[in-house]
Length: 333
Ligand code: ADP
Image 1: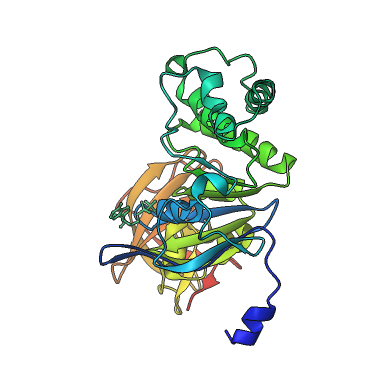
Image 2: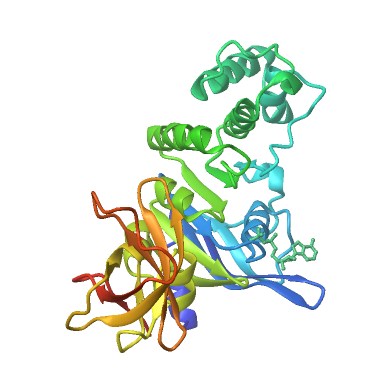
C-alpha cells in the first residue's frame, strides 16, 4: 500500500489485525493474517486442528508476541496495551474455571481485577449469571456443575466486565450434541442483544455457520477465505475450503468442481451426462443414507441418498451412475 493511502486511511471501527505473523522458533504459526471484526459483528475463525486458530486468538488478546503486524481497536494501536487492559473478554476451550471459588467468585473475577465497588460487583455478577440462564447459582461450587453449566459460568465470567470484544475458543467444544444445539440458540440470542464484537474459533463448520455473520477459513496459518457465512458455504474459494466443508472435489464431470453430497444424483440406470460408478460404502445418517462410490478412474465421491420409500440405499458392490443436480456444481480454480 502507498504510504499516503496508509496515512489517510479512515480507522476501522472495532478490531483490525493487519499482516499478523506469529512464530514459534523457526516455525511460522501465522503468516500475513488480515482480520476485521466490527461492532455487533460475529466472526468465526474456522479451520482444522493445528491451523493456527488458538494462536490467532491469543495474538489478538496480546498473549502471544507478534513477529509482524498490528492489532488495532478503532484505529488505536494495541501494541503497548497489556491483555487485561484491552477490554477483551476471553473464554478458553477448557473453561479454566477456578475450582476453589464458587460460581459467583468465578464470574466476579474480572470485576475484582477492575477494582469495582463490592455492590456493583454483586449486581453485575448476578446480571451476568441471569444472562446465561444461571440466576441463583452464585453460591454453588463449580465442581458440582455439569459440563454445560461450567461452559455458561465461563461465558458469564468473560461477559461480566462488559468487554468490547468477546473471544471464544471452541465455545461448544466439549458438549454433547443436544446441549450444543441448545447453546447455539442461546449464544445467538446473546450475541444479538448487544452491539458487541464477537470473535470465535472452531474446527466445526456447523458451529461456525450457526453462529457467525462472517467466516474466516484458516489453513496452515494462512487465510484461505474470508467472506460472509453464506458465501463461504455456497461458494468455497479453494479446493481446501471445499473439502473442509464436506464437498467432493472432482473432475469426474470434466472441469474441476466442488459439489456437495446432496448435489450428486445416484441412479441404478445409465442416462445422458452420467458417470459410471460402483458403490463402495454405505452409512446411515440422521435423516438420509450416505453412499461412497468409486469411478472407473478410482476417484471416490460421497453421495446423499434420500429417496422416500426406496428400500434403503444401494449396498456396496452395486453398479450405477451419477449425475450432477442442476446448479449444484461450484467451479474451482
Ligand atoms: P489450532 O488452534 O488451529 O488447533 P494452534 O494455534 O493451537 O492451532 O497451533 C498452530 C500451530 O502452532 C501448530 O502447528 C502448533 O503445533 C503450533 N504451536 C501452538 N502453540 C505452540 C507453542 N507454544 N510452541 C510451539 N508451537 C506451537
